[in-house]
Image (cartoon, rainbow, N blue to C red; front, side, top):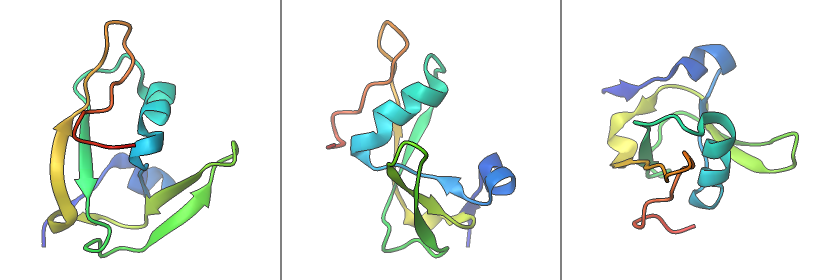
Length: 96
């Protein structure tokens, strides 16, 4: 089966994920002003690798996928637009 990998899998041992409610804040913290980002929307019921919930130093729990993501778990790929100031905008199809 085809899989999606990111350098974070080798560096950190997992793929970083976020819930829609946390997405803009996290993206602006790490990637503000960086255009051409895409959002991979996944069905967690279809993810084959283990998903763990880990707490950040700020006390927020984030999901992490502990292996290459099987592509059949990706249900949508969305552009992640920026506003005029370089901040990310949550696509209207995603609900926080």
